[in-house]
Length: 264
Image (tube, rainbow, N blue to C red; front, side):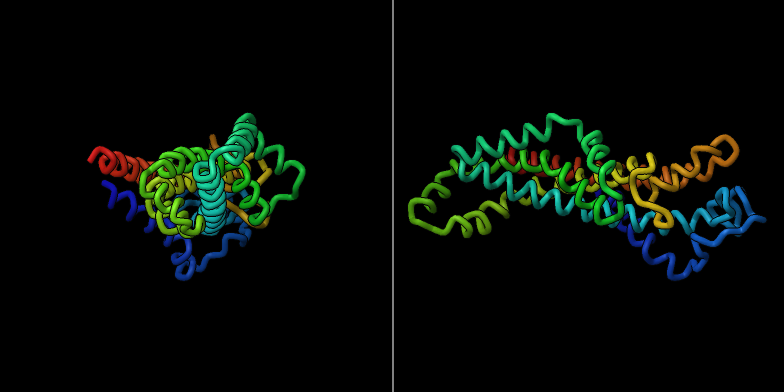
């Protein structure tokens, strides 16, 4: 099933960028004669309240959601990796200080922290990537810190430290490869979380600003007419569900594989 979920994730992600090259209907064109049309051969996912093609908008919005999700997760994961290794390897006061900082960030509910940050900043894709990254590194750092702490007590690491091998070389050559499985597990969860965070903010009107769109903003557009035009909210919601579900299943598979290796 891992290959199925990975293939589905890649297929949908690539489709968001490739299909618009062939499906040339504009997601911005208004048509007062085609308001809230149901899905048909002419409009695969129907039209919205302004007569715009929903399929074209889902493709355009998918690009925004995926770019924000993957970039935000990349930045937060690498930030968490660096902080976690630093805490676990150097220990002592460095570890205590970093642990206090992590705990302070975890004290605030992540989504409410996102809301607080975005409320004072005019949101756009770059701002959303930065804000989601700032609020999403703690889980990765705690996992990496725990594993780094255990690795630093291994005999071969102690020998390397005694022989005055460069700390940077130890971290890059020995720590990084051993921590790669944990990084991938946390990263896949992070992408799902970042997409959901962006969608939630855009749904509340605090995410991307028109005319830019994302799955969350398209979903929000359909909430007022959901009783007469189900398709307007259904399709962007379906994309969010499929992508996040695939990412979670991939993460679970990687975690199971990592656990099996530890048992062996």
